[in-house]
Length: 341
Ligand code: DAH
Image 1 (cartoon, rainbow, N blue to C red):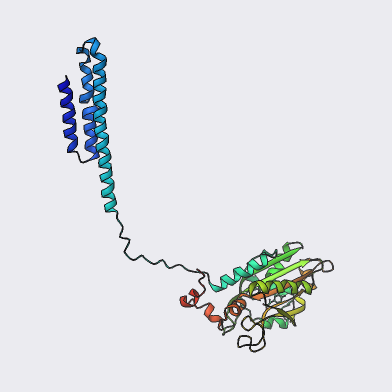
Image 2 (cartoon, rainbow, N blue to C red):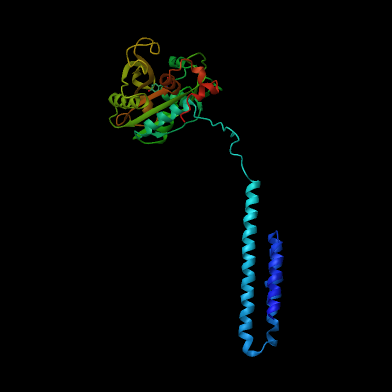
């Protein structure tokens, strides 16, 4: 019997030595220690073993089974390791090869500045309102106190789609749309595209504005000045000052034009500010009572301030850009200069 044991052990060891795949190991496992394998079938001779030796025989069979399983486990681990190594070899990367450069885009300068303007005003409690770019004559002009034959229409060369539909020439349209739908207190900023038939180094047929509107009890020109003083310090730098000059807009009374100290020379006078030390950045004023009334707001109770600034203008001042057209030519060399990474 001992010989039979030795023979099985020996043949298992020898067969294992030449195994090269997990599949073969599986087959050998079945052959030796499987349900009807050689070791298991030894138990079948149990009936021929004298009773007093049955226990030690059973133990010997189990020991042999454990021993052979141990060989299988060792071989299996070896094979797995080899398989891993050959897989690593196949998948090896040459880390000395030069990488492929991924070209990432960056925000357009107008979007950078638009975001800065939005952040500045939302930080002061303004909500964002975006109105349509194709507007009716009513929202673009009439509700803003510019009737059909008003000379102020000449201030803006408007694109007409038909007698009544226009490409909005100013974001002031947003004022009316908001006031019609919202009761004071109102504090909104309306950024967006506007269109005018104009095309030279400082005008583009499509450009961007940001309209601001505050309506509440007791709003005055002082609030406007305080608000803009704060805004220019955020958008330019802490030394920037504002100056209000009397002006005329049909939708504000009084109306002002607002200048800031030149961002290049800080007020001394240079080529950017044409020697004056000041640069105009926006139009503003106290909302004309007629506009409030047109929108159903009682002008005896409420008053408002409004302003409209050109995003291109602020961008050009901030970055010293002298020709507005460079902002729309999509020259990657130009745009890459605004990459902040
Ligand atoms: N809408 C004016 C323009 O495009 C700018 C403007 C001036 C807006 C005065 C205002 C304002 O809200 O009060 O020229």
